[in-house]
Length: 187
Image: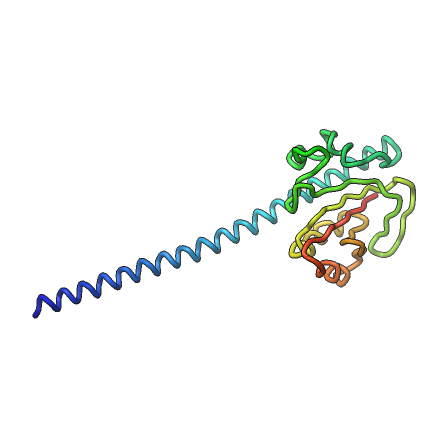
């Protein structure tokens, strides 16, 4: 009888041991999922920050080119792609005249424009005197952060066709669709 009681006790212990292992595996799985998610979010933020630094460097280099050539006339995806100093090779796609961003493999368009309007509503007009960069297919959940990355660094930020002049305009423009184009215009 005592022997049977010991056997039953051992079976219960094995059952508890198995439950403990299952619980440990579940806990490790949850912790791993959280860690991977946090890593992915951090990597996305780092990639967005690196692109921001690259585009701000681009705008600075383009100002030097404007001083040398008088305007931004002739600036295209092709001219930017062919230049070794305008955009780093790490952002150049293997497809000619396309640029890789954290959002898509064809994520940037470059063009000269003749008008720009700052956040206060002041308009500037002069043929090919402003440079525009379009960040294509920005996921809607990254729209507000992307706008905030550039709002104080360039003259004009648009989301789609909406000029962003404040938080309300940003929030409204960033609330539609699943992906948007963020357009940066600088002097």
